[in-house]
Length: 205
Figure 1 (spheres, rainbow, N blue to C red):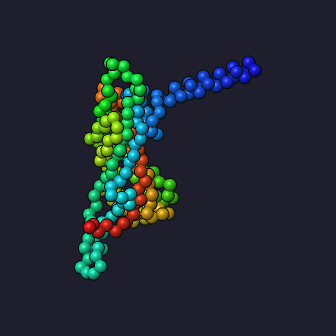
Figure 2 (cartoon, helix red, strand yellow):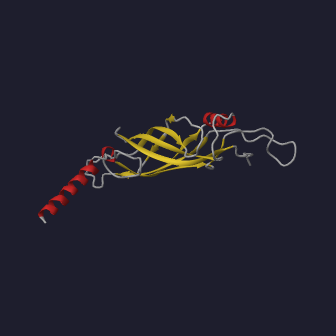
Figure 3 (cartoon, one colour):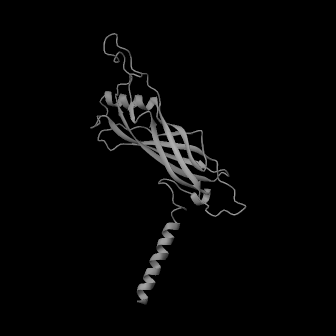
């Protein structure tokens, strides 16, 4: 019985050590350093405006029911919204406690992954959002897929360099961001959103 008790105690110590080695605190997947920054990232939601269906080419004379047909809407960067919900990770602050807010998103790496066989590779990119967030929920406008990457995707497909097995072709855009709290301690947060790339008919209105 004594042996079992000691074994159980060792398991508890091992579990505590494992949790302690994970970098401090819980929070949303992809977030870190809540202990160091004093900020607990509760959720990061990434969405695309106006739709996850992203057009990659603008064609001439394809819009309308009768001639003269008009051109598609010109391509623009596909943007979206990152919604960050955060709170202080210090549940019992002492009178000398300094709020870690507002915090600032310093930089974000955008990468793109696809499970579709033959999907073109989309080059990753680093952006520098002008985005501060506070205790609560904050929304900021961010880039999802710019014109250059849309055009390259279409060139890769139309030239036959890549032949995705599914069109529309689904990708996951992954945002991995570095932020600083009000006293310049760094943490990380992550968000992701699915997007569908194709030659969508985009006639405006």
